[in-house]
Structure formats: structure tokens, C-alpha cells
Length: 190
Image (cartoon, rainbow, N blue to C red; front, side, top):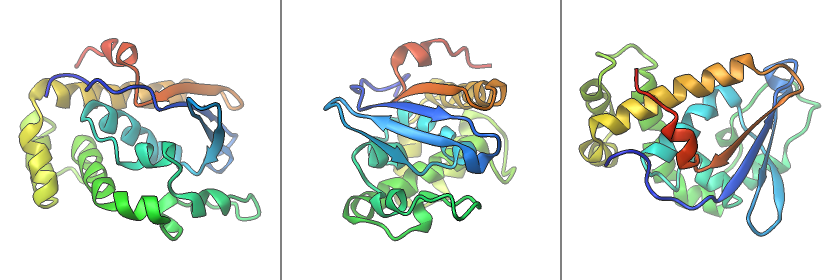
């Protein structure tokens, strides 16, 4: 696997930064002209956007959101409750349940790239080793990843975190799901 797979754009993503993380708002606009709001915990879910795009994981969090999954979480979206929740905190709908095994692999890939628990070196081999620890499906993905793809994912996550941190409250971060090749080409793994 080298670089990003050849996806077609499934959704335009607009994330408006709130004064606090609970105030962030995310919308997905689809090629058929429809749009819907999605429950996204930005700091947790932006890495999914990069890793799922680079590793070619169409049925992880963002692919499921773009296909209309996690509808119970999106319907329950209210501001009466000011604490943040993940989409997976709500009961899964049929699509999210069907994609759950792929979502778990995507989550494992994100955790392996971010090295959330400081487990081993932050090298391509370290990412593959961490990924193998998440079970057979994740181990299969680990065996398909080349060093350049892993470096691209890590650099992309760092870039997206920087862009989000620099964005003033009230401004919008515009992306695509999956990330467009032109966005990924700007990455220079460092």
C-alpha cells in the first residue's frame, strides 16, 4: 500500500469550531445534495479522518457517518446536555452495527498511529506491532501497510491537529471524506 487509495469523494465535511469542544459543529454534505449534522468529538475523530483515508478503510467512523450511520446519536444531538459524547455512546443503528468490525479496526489503526499509550517506538514497525496487538483483522491490516503510508498517516494527523489548533472559534475547517489526494500530497513525512 503506497499513499492514499483511489477513493471518490463521498462527503464534504465542514467543522465549525466552537468556543469550547462541546460547541463544535460538524456537517456532512453528500453528492446527492443532501446534508446532515454529525456527532463528532473533533479531537478524537479528526485522526480517524486521516488514518481511514490513508489506509483505505471505507467502513470506519467517517465512512459510516457519510453513509448515514450512527443516526441515533445524530438524532439525540441536543445542547441541553453540555458534556461531550462519542457517536458510539448511543445505541448503534443497523449500518453502524454492520460496520462495527471495520470501525474497531479503524480505531485500532488510529490508536496505533497516535501511540496513545506510549507503547513502543513511533516508527512504521512500531505502528505495525501495536496494530497486530488488536486482533486478527487489525493484524491483517498491519501486514498490508508500507512504511510510506504509515508515515503519511502520522504526518497527516499532525497537520490536521495543527490546522484545528490554529483555527479561531467560529471559523470552519473544510475537508472531504475521504481526504482528497491533493490534501495528502502536501504531506512531507517528518
